[in-house]
Image 1: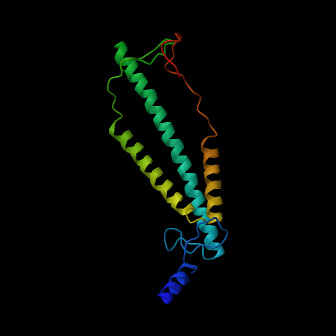
Image 2: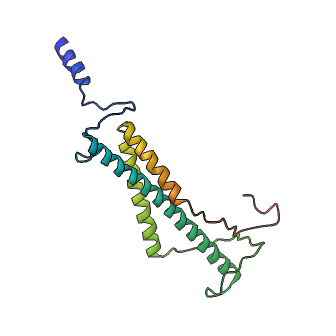
Image 3: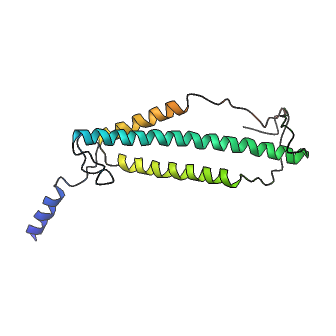
Length: 177
């Protein structure tokens, strides 16, 4: 009994166990056998790769936001035309007191819906991949991902799209934002 307890405790103290705290050091594997940080150059390349993935995730996040914004703008145009009975070829004219109460149905179109779904899936997979890499608790990887997310967010939000209030109302009882 004591011998097996000794072997069990020896096994727990082996270096193969994953650390449960942030540490600066080399990593045996990061999700895949080929993606590792056993040497300095491998660790640097792994950090650059994971930082780049964090940047791409931020770009996809911004792209998803822009697609949603475009979809919402088109939806409001569609509803306005439907409720006012105007022709779809007529240009959309904003009204300062426009308030749409009855929504109706709106179709995105197959290609747009497919593209939005692909962007969502890519963002989902990349986000989980980066999260699992950070869970190695390697401080170098954590810092690389944080810097990559910062740079990706900074670059993707340089050009801020001005907020256009499409649905406005002068009456204080009709709408609260």
